[in-house]
Image (cartoon, rainbow, N blue to C red; front, side, top):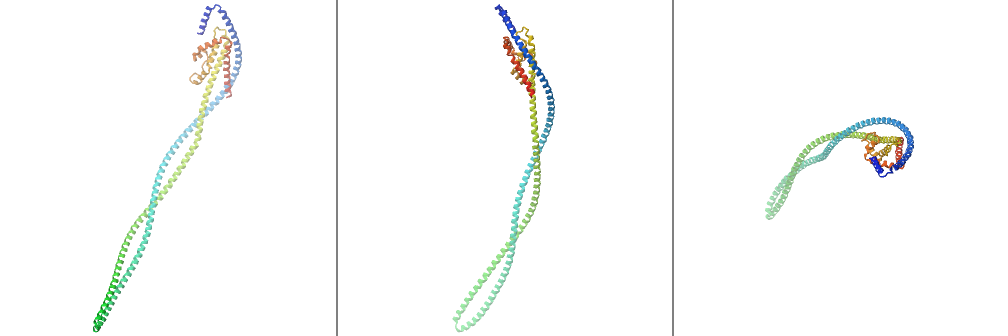
Length: 465
């Protein structure tokens, strides 16, 4: 389209201006001189680039040899690492399975131990309750023993009291008998005295009657009053003795009742004491049995705690292996990222090599295309396509979409036009600017130098790595 427009514009100018062929010839001479100067400069650049290309090819061969050796070593190392990683993963899987099994077993054992511990605590609580009951029973037994001792003391006291009562009874009987005898003797004596006195009084009365009757009567009455007083005193003594005898009999009856009550209480306490002794013996045997069971459970608990500590120690010992395996896995991931980065760099390197080859072809074809009548030479279009290809945005798109495009692509003008069809108008504009003179063409030379410099820097950085 630009050619047709230029031709049409040229024809219009020829129609309008009859002196245009001369001016066109002058312009063509200037362009030819500029092209000759640019071709000479480009030939010099081509020779320098050819020397650099030979050097780069030698470096490329050495780098390819190094790359092949490194690739072989990398493959060996990769295979070894893969085998070691697979072995470590298998070991890790096995250790994880063992760890899970041990954890499940430990959890089951812990649950069983907790159940057993709860049962033991319940049994221990029951045992403590029984021990408290036994302590209460022992206290009651001690109280019963104290009661038995008190009972024995009371029995001995009762026996002593009974003996004392018997003695007092005998004494009372003796005293009563003696008192009765005394009373009888006194009564007999009094009777005898009274009889004697009566006889004496009768004799005296008779004598006094004979002598003096009133005086005698008065004396008799006085003696009679004395006898009555004496008799009343003796009756009081006999009554007091009878009351004392009755009180002693009542005391004896009360003592007999107390003795019977104490004997009944002693028999009941003896039966209760015998029964409590049997219960105490049974509880003592049960307590010994429970103590033995508690000791056995404590031994089992200590064994399970030791087993738990061994399992925890084993888990702690396996933890560094797990950390090492995780570190190995992270290293493998980093190696994969490094491989991906190297693949990206190789892709960029291939793109740069293709760009250099295209530039070399363009520089070789430049002298031949100077003879063509096309105002925009093919090598200039190729350089423009190469510039578009090496655009930073294009490179970033290629690096971002490194897996979506084919690995090798040609750099011909048709492919460049397919990749970026919207740049066609810009190519024509740049070509028209390049026709203005050598100054515009010389602006393309730093582009080639920057491309080769970038390629040389990339190869040197790879050789350094």
